[in-house]
Image (cartoon, rainbow, N blue to C red; front, side, top):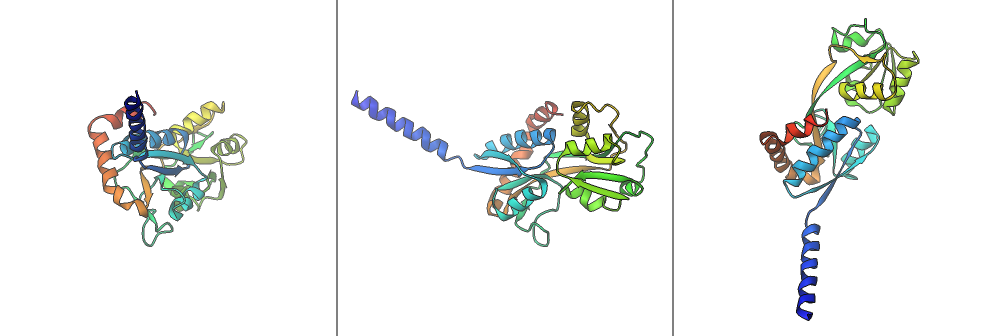
Length: 235
């Protein structure tokens, strides 16, 4: 009996040690709900393949980047290419070079006659709004006639519904879902998209050694069909 008890304790200790051997990385995000789900599920699968657990936390957009750059969290996503490294505002962030998802950034409006054939320049005559800290819009849309930055997407669509702005800038899939959830059927995305963008995960430079391993894991899930299966269940 004593031998069985000792064996049981050793087994429990061994299992606990094995579980403890899997490090956990904390990644922060301010992505929209659908894109956040894509980040979470793709990251869980790719991190699992390199023996790492994932914890995803939500922070306001700019704060999320700052926290990752300072090393308060281990990574940040999803973001456009080129935000991290020497000479950037976030020098401590290293881009995982394999694309996670491709996202359509669009303008939503109640006026379907508005045309955006000239891309970002098409915004110049209009009052627009977007989420504070969204770098794509901060880099390209500040020349509009009036620019509002807000903290929550619900604010964007309420402003548009109330006629306080002409256009709100957001992602296509999540914007369609949000307008539906808010009961705002008159709000719809305009075509063409302002930009279709590849989005990436960033890690703090202290985890730089993981970047090639994680890139390979992402390539692997694309190759074996896991990637398409995950995304087709989300979008």
